[in-house]
Length: 171
View (spheres, rainbow, N blue to C red):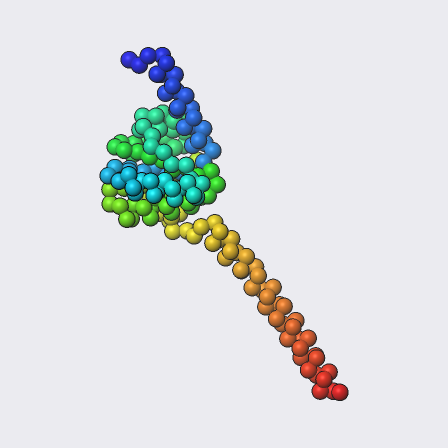
């Protein structure tokens, strides 16, 4: 039986993990077995650059952290090696990076995930992974808004040019 100090430390870890899960807009749980140190380092670097927190977690601690929440169904996949990626801002970054990594590394597998505090299936995570980045989406929206304005400006310029041409021919 663990002593009181160890138990207190574990309870603190579970509380911190629960808080992180609660703040995250999206999270992806993976099995990282067989991943080389070099690959893991590259993966962690890419996740960090995209503001995604990634860390290895004990299955029992993650299981305790999701107890009594809408994420409790995640306990079914908590076996083997487990790491979790959490994003507090970007809905697609964790899924995109981890699914791309999983495609290139056969031992690395996506186990589960959540979106806005609700457990989602693997197909949803893969769909998220296929979405473009936030910056690309914003650029697409901006160009969609800009296109009608640019067309209007060209039409007005054509009218001005036509009137200038008629005024010059009348002289």
